[in-house]
Length: 226
Image 1 (cartoon, one colour):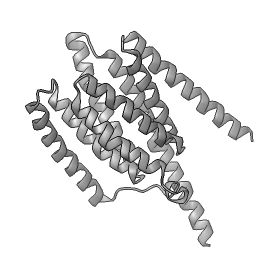
Image 2 (cartoon, rainbow, N blue to C red):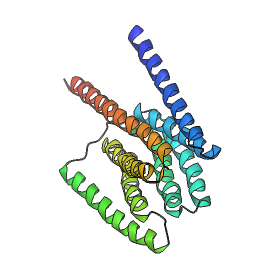
Image 3 (cartoon, one colour):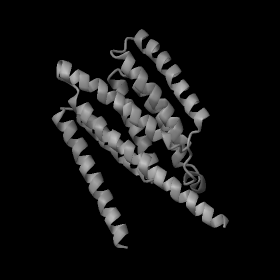
Image 4 (tube, rainbow, N blue to C red):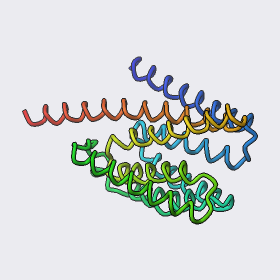
């Protein structure tokens, strides 16, 4: 009982700390109120998915719509397309799956799956780069790379592969590296670096928690078979 209470207190404390951190990052970074709000929603849904809570998929859909609209209004058409036509359907798909299917065992990519996922990421990244360059995107290399990784991440999420957290972590690290360089070069991007650092932490937490959950599920299944 005490152990459960400690875990709940820890979870609540972590949620509050990260949400305050993201909010302050947005405020000091002088982001628009709707950008700050969408960042807060993103952190909440990722934390909920960390713990396998169904509501996380619904909030994922809400975030996808909100950020898709924001991206479109700011001329970021690649981001708008991804959030509305890829992330939103994946979130809805997971939310409405039957309980036994939704809470089924976490999957792991085998070597063939890793090779295929990485190959698809590279192909999508190259295609997105040339397409974004053609339509005048201000940063086609960054947007193309993150778009490709994000698309693969969304499909891994739809099938409950633990590697979704690995690919999402990779996307965060790209943002951190690029915007850190931008900050030291021209003095902008520090708020994005801070936000993506929080997201990177959540992704690492997701890998750990999903691995533990998978290990627990396998152990429970083995006991049932005895």
